[in-house]
Image (tube, rainbow, N blue to C red; front, side, top):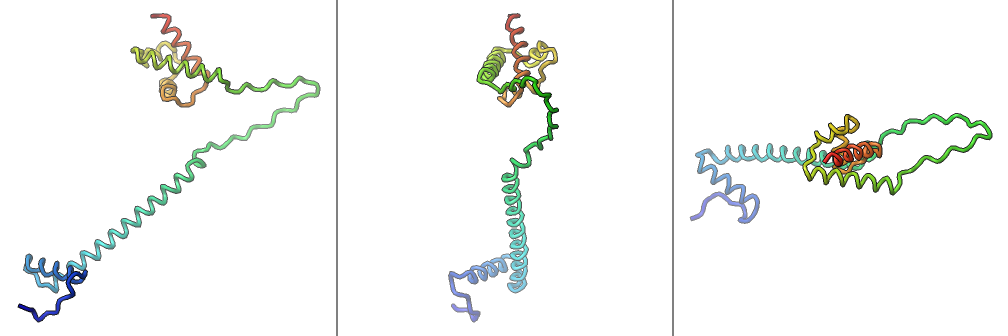
Length: 170
């Protein structure tokens, strides 16, 4: 049985499209020529949507890359201009150099943090620690120390004092 209609070559995209149109036409009872236009409309709209979505996603990836590359520059704090020191009168003794963080300070910080973690493991609450510190240490500073963020040495000293007092009570 052969139809008078010339069919596209089997295995081609055109044959696949024509077969889909024919099957949907039979299932819906719509004429093939009208259904072909509807399906083409759907294809064109879908293609435009997917193309725009791909363009939007690429633009987002590009912005993410730019942000990642610029992040160190954007987070650097501007350095405040420091005024020049007043002129030293002749014959005055030189100022001692400002102390730099030492290994001893780092060890003190590490030991204090370890004491804090140990006491917390033994049941010390943040509320109790804040009470003992009498407002010299904040909850945020305690969290920063627990999370090993950079915290000034003076805060560690205040925390160590409060920990000493708590440990002498027990």
